[in-house]
Amino acid sequence: MKFSTFWFVGTTTILLLDTGCFVLAAKKITNKCDAIGNGQGKVKQSDCEENEECTFKKKKCMDAKTAAKKITNKCDVIGNGKGKIEQLACEQKEECEVKKNKCMNAKTAAKKITNKCDAIAGDGEGKVDKSDCEGNVECEVKGNKCKNAKTAAKKITNKCDAIGEGKGKIEQLVCEENEECEVKKNKCINVKYVSPKFRWIPYAELDSAQLVLVKALDYTEKTWNVMGTNKIEKLVFEDLDSYFEEGSQKVAEQLGFGVETWDCDVNHYGGYYWSGLKEYKLAKYWMALGWNEASWKGDEVPPNTNDMKWVELTLAQQVAAMELCYRQESWDGTPIPQWKK
Image (cartoon, rainbow, N blue to C red; front, top):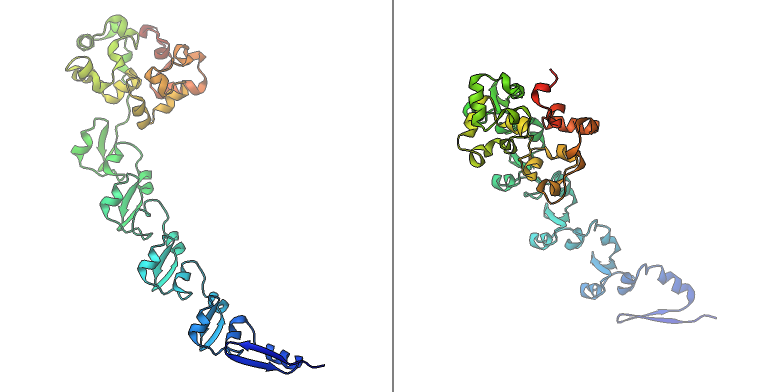
């Protein structure tokens, strides 16, 4: 038995006389958007676009799936799959960027940002005002780009070399203003450390000129022969004039001391603030000996090593102590006349 079937699509009535005819007609209706146009796809644009899943293309109403294939990223979606969009609308989304009049994911640009200095400005291109870049001590301007200063830092092998910004080249006067530095082959380098061996001369063997200077620094035979017992040795070189007596630095220099030799061989950096020890990479040696910031400030009791003899220290602790210019005799408080020659 055959049945007649009526379909109402839009304002058009379709009469299907039997199921066979229905099958033939159904083949033309490939999707619900196509059905809006009676299987022909022809329809008014406004009727088609009322359904958000449909798109109007070449005078036909089609599923938006075809167009969706062009939408390769969420930023591209802003431009309805074509990527074309006003720059402001695109850049309001920080993950997007305008490139060749299209709104695209900023992933490509992100690859250019290879370090935190490059990211400071220039949106991954690294171009930035010099002042903005150099406001960060870890950054430097190179080739109109803001880059990590890591490369330059590798060249800075000592604090005198740093005067020349890693290249070592510097005016002689600027270099030699620091007594720990010297100019050699147009570079500012550290003066080779020379231990103040005169400090290890027994008091009885000092010459007359040395005795005058030693006494001016308030040394006696006992405090000279046992290192660390004169109160002046608790001060760093730069504090001598302020906390001991005006002109003491000059006397110490006449005796043969400098900032480095006094601070290391006499004071053992004990007069530095903890922040200073960290700045000059010295805290690690005191930490190896059991000290921390609290004990250094006097908020905690000193570590056990403070009362240990040299032989009681571990090998690692002895090495740390030597980095602070201690030797077994000075650590143990052995009188200089009894030191091993």
